[in-house]
Length: 590
Ligand code: ADP
Image 1 (cartoon, rainbow, N blue to C red):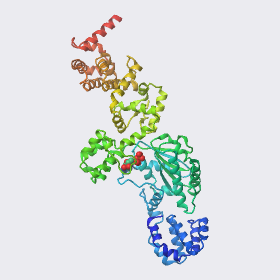
Image 2 (spheres, protein in one colour):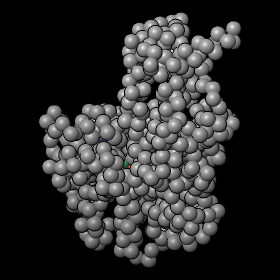
Image 3 (cartoon, rainbow, N blue to C red):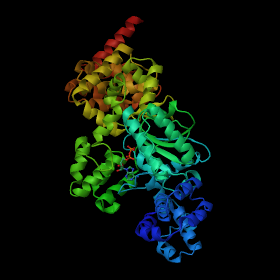
């Protein structure tokens, strides 16, 4: 019932209770279909007219706008003109025509429906994501005729809950698919007793809004709760939608596997694997585009996007438009508008603990939100996930690389990666063959922050695993995993402080030949510069010179004979020495 209508009923309650004859009014209301015969009977059983009037009003207050309108019409028909006039000012507009805004602007009908069901409001600062919202609505329409599940999945803070709430804020959708109502339930990580309490509360809520008289004993086991809910959804709330926010565990979902219509949000794409019925899913990309992100910062700080300081763009870039992070920082800036560069620095230095809570989010700080995702992995997988700390930003890797790093069979690796992807801990680019996997910058930053003291070990592990797998050979096939190793092996050596290994690669004509053949000489030159502080200055100079002198040759295909090229280097250089040695070996081999 709309707020205005409710308050006018409450205000005039006494007058109404004094004057009306419920019997006649209820006849009209029954024929309008807003009061059931059962309800009427219960009211008629009241001993006096006054008691009946009291309970009719009690009932009306729990009903919807339509009931109010019907009650008003009944008053008119029964010639209670004065009373009808009292209610007239708050007649809800019928949920049709003019009220149905062409787009998705929430109408009073929608608002009443959603607040009744406990659907959260839009966050104070809100930007629209029309494409995503439409995708969710499109899936919800599939539930029009039949029950089923719509899963909205994505990483922590990508805006899943906001999106779910937004998707149902739509007149046509509710009217067409869920006229029975929309009921929101926040789940989160919980154990069985907590789950039971949640379902008890839900059942109580559903029973209450039907009828306050029925004081059922709360269900006291999960099975019983499931049955009660099944009955309520099937019999009392047909064609309604249950929204389960933030599901972690498929065992939780089993309690809701009752053949009804469900929209759920989760980081774990596979939670619905073990429930039955039609299933649809929508993936939420982790970031907003730059304009939307700037819009959020602008709204928080009451600045027009164009006049935002330079740092705004950097903040957006740094967190890749994560709705959570942008909003967290926006909320902080609202309090302290002169701290743009401070918060940017915090973000760059990964001081996630300082980037705290916007009131609407469940986690105190970003780091907790991230950690929560990892903590639910089995322990051995947590360890494997930690190994990913050593990846470089924006670098995508094939499963093969992880077979080497984890020393596991390809199938096993694929299963694990699949799990990570499903739990929104990792992303997959499936446009390529083989698939390539990568971390979101925030995830990587978080891992680096969390494992700050172990970085050297983690990089060393990569090198050791590589050596164990390939021995002295280098992979040369030109396949994806080979590209990774050729590109990053020495990087891992440098980070692991494995100076010996680094020397023996960077100062090896073989490596120079392999890497420049596969990656081109520019990459190598870059390595010499990057590892400059670790490498011997003189020898490094000799290799760099060789590369810059022969750069154009090394770009040629077929690839030239590097030994030949190197023989023309100054005779006192390491490059020449190795070339000569190899030439002699070749000669003696005939
Ligand atoms: P998830 O459910 O994916 O963890 P939420 O939907 O709870 O993420 O969103 C996290 C935070 O991000 C919200 O509290 C809000 O501040 C911000 N946010 C998400 N979506 C939007 C949006 N469309 N407009 C503005 N802020 C948003």
